[in-house]
Amino acid sequence: MPTTDPLLQGNVLLDIDGVGVVANFTSVSGVSSEIEIVDNPYVNEQGKVTIAKLPGKPKTPTVTLKRGLTGATEIWDWHTTIMQGTPDRRNGSVILMNTMGEEVLRYNFTNAMVSKISLSEGGATASGVQIEEATLACETLVKG
Image 1 (cartoon, rainbow, N blue to C red):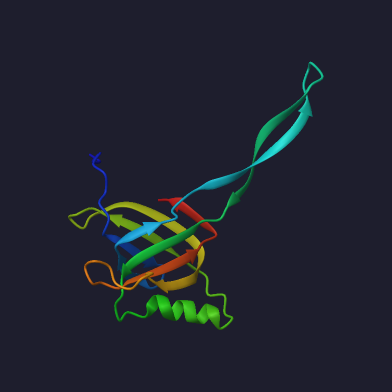
Image 2: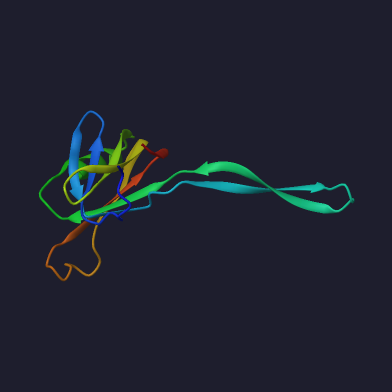
């Protein structure tokens, strides 16, 4: 039976198709689904101009993952390949785990590229850990 307890931050995995789990992250943001809404003016039965709202194009998601900086280079290498002009698009999943290390939720993405890697502003956190952020520009993101 699924739990109704909220998930705690700190156990997010990045799984890349064909590579496997490449990193464990402490947080994730930008997991979203959004559709542009288009105004469609028309004249109603009373002869008045009315605006109907219609679904437009889906917006592409940008997912940001944060973790303590390590010596692992898989994500940096992927980003470097893209910076050198090769559009290295990959499919994969962002996996949210519970405190017992069990998968609770999975968000599958397609044709993602690492668009940005950065270190946290202002240096280290209060715990002394330097935080690395990786931003994935995805074509699609669906809850799996």
